[in-house]
Length: 342
Image (cartoon, rainbow, N blue to C red; front, side):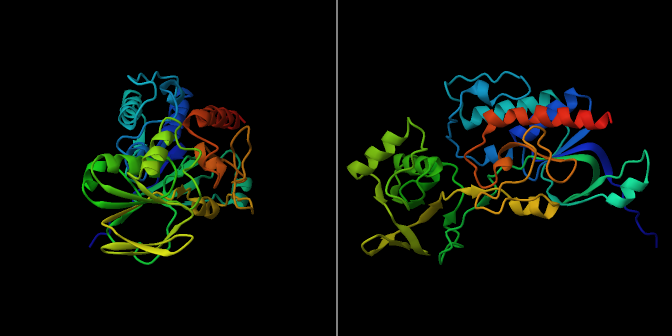
């Protein structure tokens, strides 16, 4: 019986981990510079945007979401999710970006530094293991974003099928008793949209008001709906337990039990900092857990591994967005080109 030989790893000069807007921007810059690259994305193209609510509208205008100096034309003052998906898909297809979708990076193995020093004029590469195979690379760019790991409620019943940390379309919840946890943009959108489709909506908010970062044209709407009683809101409150037909809410005064069909937990998301730590990237010891990298080159403490996009902010996910992260791609590729000439 013959044994099937393993295929050798596929080598690329640059492996880009993450196929969101900033990962695509890095691919565009690498291609423009004539550098061999491959983008590896664990989900679909711009996976994070795909999981945004169906009717989501961006804060930013379309020109601030552009990458690679490619025009983003929108019929609206502020583009919506559908337009963004169309734009980034057209960018990827028109420029024939080298992307591997639905392939998750499982780990990165560092080159043997002592061996690297002893071998002249011979590259020793990073080894990247994915769910579909093996790759090697001279440089790695991590652009994994943060819309990945939801903050859990950590209450009994959170594992019930009626509980979701991702909200998409409001029609699904028509006539149902819906509880929305959170006070940010996602929570407010879910509450307003499901209410307008006929759901009986209750909000549970940890603080004493709707979040100040809620889009300025939406915040008055939710405040007025709560004020008039169309949407019931419990402030300074938390969910204590979830059961198939009801939910317990701890208010400042008393424990309240309400009928419930669905729980939409819009409690926020966090970047996969554990992956960075396993890769050897140092994180700050404070609550922000900011990764260590050079602000000018975006190279981390691990030589030839770079960070791009919101992942650079650690747990401070409100500091970086598409519009102020686009420049990372140019900074990184410029530094890689400089290193390649040495």
